[in-house]
Amino acid sequence: MRLKRQEVYISLKINQSPFNVGTAFELPEFNQAQVQSLLGPHKLSWTEAQIEQLMGLVGGHPYLVRLALYKIARSELNLAQLLKTATNEKGPYADHLHRHLNTLQQHPELAKEFKNVITTSEALSVSELGQSLFKLSGMGLIKINEENNVIASCELYRRYFKTR
Image 1: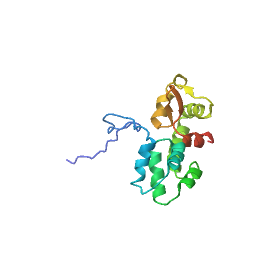
Image 2: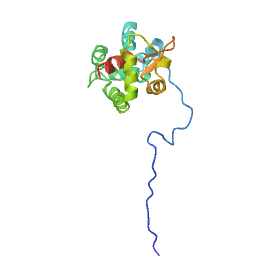
Image 3: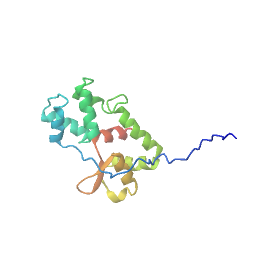
Image 4: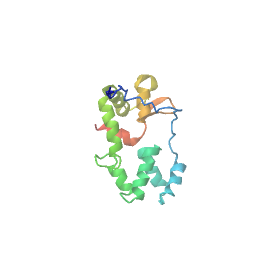
């Protein structure tokens, strides 16, 4: 008697991973002193004004700061070019921005709420966003300021998504 081999396909929820175990934590933004300390390993020597220019664009967002320093250290571009091309479709942050744009396009309700955040002249209160607050915050697109209002987490996001 021969046994017949049969493959079993299990339906998985693609947005949940069995490997998502442990404690979640939020990585805080870098401050100016921390960005200054990152310059050394990248063999960069910047003035305080240059650090302020970078932070004016990306805040202290750890990934965005690190990506900028990496690309500048590799001589792919300089700070002036990074600041000028940051929101371009082929700019240094293009892949990162496209991933967020794709997510927002797949979730129109999030896109609508995020548009409200970046187009309003005044910060929105936490209560105005409802459930979208946690999703947009989890994506890193928004943050809650000291007055408990919702704002875009950095100028890069505000400028890029305002035109899309």
